[in-house]
Length: 362
Image 1 (cartoon, rainbow, N blue to C red):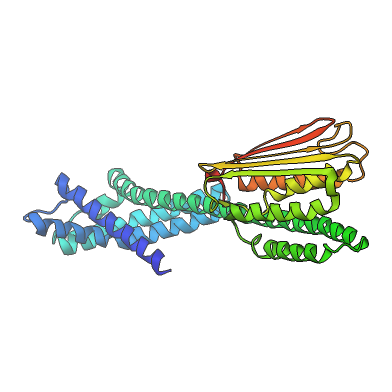
Image 2 (tube, rainbow, N blue to C red):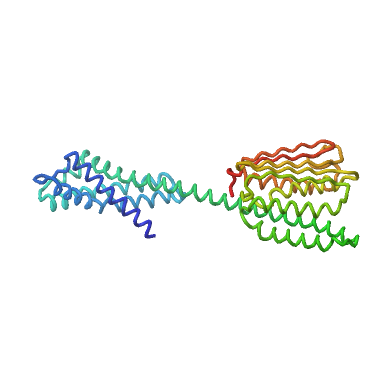
């Protein structure tokens, strides 16, 4: 409230000084026998006196404008109210000019009746009042438009943040479900590796709980979580799966959205190696140079290649679409300028992702 009062006070002070300067510079002040600073201060006094009419007029017009914009008043009602306000303001200005300005400040007399009935006098005061009212209302409408745009942007940002959190919430149970299935398979075999796998899972869950809540993490953390996940999955496939993960990073502290790369690896295992009865492969290549991230995952597969991720009769087809659709939407929200290409053939499935980390919204 105090800040708003300062803005309004500053407007009226600047208006009085500006109008006084115009009258002083043009020599149309009507003041005789005075010059220099005394003349300018006298003009300032005159302009200040007229604020008695101009300030109520402007704020009354603000109220009328607000009612019109909020659709409480129709256009005819608004026009009538505006005409009425200007009529009272013109009358008030003429009376103040006669009794206060000329009668008290200038110590002279002018014909009041002529001022009240002359079209020239009425037109002059209407123009003066319309000038200050137009400036004030223009500023108000401009500020209102800017405020509305800011509010719309904030609402959109909140909406996108909520959507992103929802997408992350979907991804985490999906990842946990797949990993628990892996542990279940090891436990059924009474594998000695079960305890180590549980420990790795605990570490990964800790990462998901704490790191995933952040807007960004260092890319070295994302690489570590991918390596851990690969180690967990490789336990299931023994020698029938060949996994390579190569990365060339110029800055391991570069920031990236958390758990953005892992879902592609997860899909490669679940819908590539997980559905293969023979030897299979997953090749992962990650490079980051000058904030340009290139990520490619290629995995062998069996099937006709009819669907984007799996065959048309695959029972996991819906789940696969949800997983890829989820991560695609996250990319759209976080990195709108990213490039994602998917190549699905009968024998291989390839994902290529390029992100300019400098263009991200994190």
